Length: 286
Image (cartoon, rainbow, N blue to C red; front, side):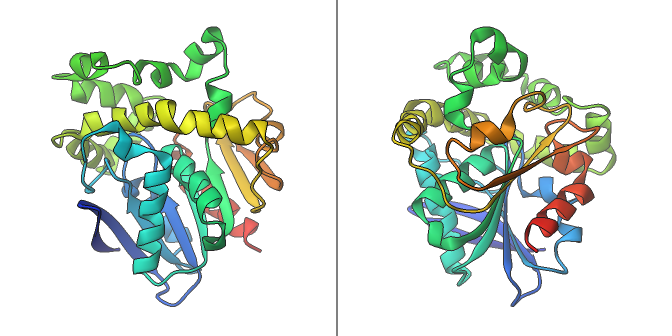
């Protein structure tokens, strides 16, 4: 994969490209608390079919980490992606996102639907649904959505314990931490997480969603402002979406959805089931 950098409004962003130079484009957007390398087990199964563009979202990986939660709205992060596509002369892409990256992909679909021919959202429920859960329900799987939006306290508690916090987050899966340790990705994630401003940037991502993005999505839900892009939904049997009526809930905001639950994996199914994820991505594009 070839590294690139682009500066957008004084923020330098990192992304990589590979696959077929003149092929159809598959854009990959990672989640929290990771970087583009979360796709390392998926890309080998896609690169014979697409030109791959995998981005480090602002605040993550080797991209800049500007201060201020106003710099981490879904709208601004989606605009970053539109600028990267323009820099690569891409006007039509299959956009695939996991976790926080899927939220950026969703916003891109609202703001620039002409750029997207297919959409894949992996291991997320609509933001407006998550924040409508009861405290009892949220405590099971979405505790960090509450903890990380509290002002100041999270960074105070995480400071000096960055490695322990990251290890806790990336141990939520049977043998997941051991898997990440065995192929060197844990060292990469930890290195990124310990960069100056990285923890604050990740917290800003969640805080911006709560303060700015949530009211906009609630308004879209109330006004039945729905996406018309064919959308693939993937989630893990042991992940955050397990047991939820995933397709029914997403149909409130997207007209055409197709969903699949991947067995024997959790939230980080890109790491655990990379080839299976890739096969679903490919099948959905036929």
